[in-house]
Image 1 (cartoon, rainbow, N blue to C red):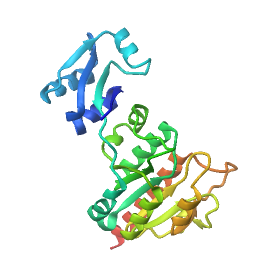
Image 2 (cartoon, rainbow, N blue to C red):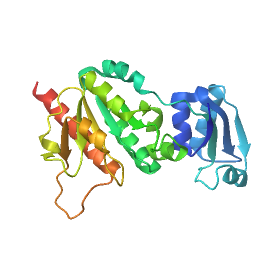
Image 3 (cartoon, rainbow, N blue to C red):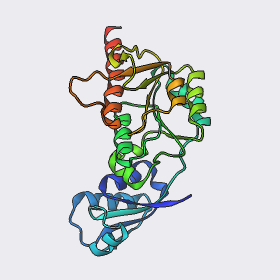
Image 4 (cartoon, one colour):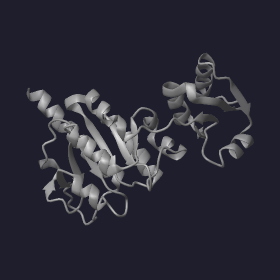
Length: 251
């Protein structure tokens, strides 16, 4: 397994909360008076991770100038899940299964924001292609505000095969595309569903688009042609939740 350096309070706190066993070393700024850093330092000691004091200049060098807020951690990166685990994830989620498929998102800030929205929406897993897409990097972890450690993340060797696994498991696929003829708010999101989003520039690839059961668009009134993928993902995810809450309330 590879290691990476986590920097910043949110990233280190998430690792301590959800994956402390993979923290190799913890570094804190010498003489820091930040109460959150002191709290994290004490929690690390309780979990068997001994903090190492470093002056600010050393932390700056260690993190390459990244905003570290006085704390960093050397972390063993767990491997992403594979598409072979999708049937189990579908079964675990049941009728409330909600997957987010990102076909080729390359900007780590966008992926981090998508993960943050996915975690808030209770997504069953985020699925990305293994190649030609960003994975979980330190930047993604910071942008996700800890969601990268809480949302199952699947890196599919073959995205078309992963989409077939979803469909075989009874999951309906709705792709978001500007050319979609159905407004997002007219799609019925009852039962297990997956939202499929394209990359920042090219959108969904042809095979991905063809695998979708529906193509929908987000109605817009302004002159902007499209939304940022992370914004579109948030809009779509919470439309699914809105429908489900409305259905539960009327039951």
